[in-house]
Image (tube, rainbow, N blue to C red; front, top):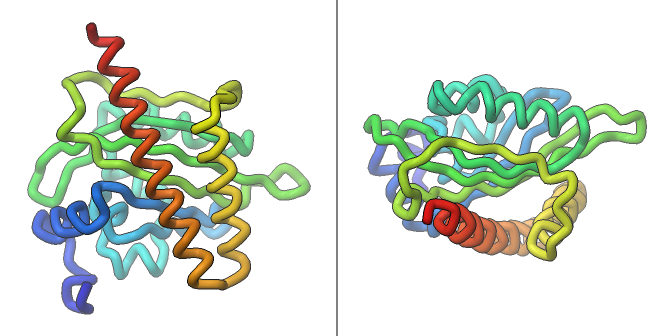
Amino acid sequence: MDEAADDVVSEAALIAALENSGGVGFWMWDIRKDEARADPVSALLFNISPARSRAGVSLSEILAAIHSDDQPHISQAILDCVQSGSSYTAEYRVCSPAGRLRWLFTRGHFYLDAEGQPTTGRGVIVEISDSKSAGTAFAQREGDSLDALNRTADLCLSLHNAVSDLDDAPMLALTEALLLEIGRHLAARQRVTHGSALH
C-alpha cells in the first residue's frame, strides 16, 4: 500500500484490502494505554486508515463503527472478557465507508498481569457478509469451550502475544499467518453452526 493510500478510508481501499487478505484480519489492543492497532483490512472495516491504526486508536473509536443495534451487547461482552482475561466470539455489523453494512466474525482473547489487571488483547476478524444470512448479532464468552479449534486459537493468540515481545519480524509474520488461517476456520465453522440453526 503506498503512503497516500495509507491515509485513505474508502470503499475502494476496503475492497482491495479484503481481496488481498482473503477477508481476514487481526488486531491487538494495549489496554493500559487504550491503543488498538490492526492490519489494513481490520482498520478499514472500522473506517480507520491503516496509518492511524498503526499509530493506535482508542477502543471507543472502534466501537463507534459498530452498528448501533449491536453496540451495547458487543461492548459489554468485550468489557466482561477484558476484566476476566478470557476469550469471546462475536458476530456483528459495521458500516463501510460507502454506507454498506458488513457482517464481521471476531474472536479475541484478553490477558491479565500477575495482579489480575488487564494488559492486552489480540484477535482475528473475518468479513462474512457474503455468507451471512439475515439475522441478529451475537456474542459468546468462551470460558467453557474446550474443543480443539478454540484451544488452538487461544494458544496461537498467546503465542502471538509472546512473539510480539521478541521484536522478531519473521516469527511475528508466521504467527500472523497462522492467526489468519485459524480465523478462516473459525468463520467457516460459525457459518455452518448458524446455518444449521436456521433450518
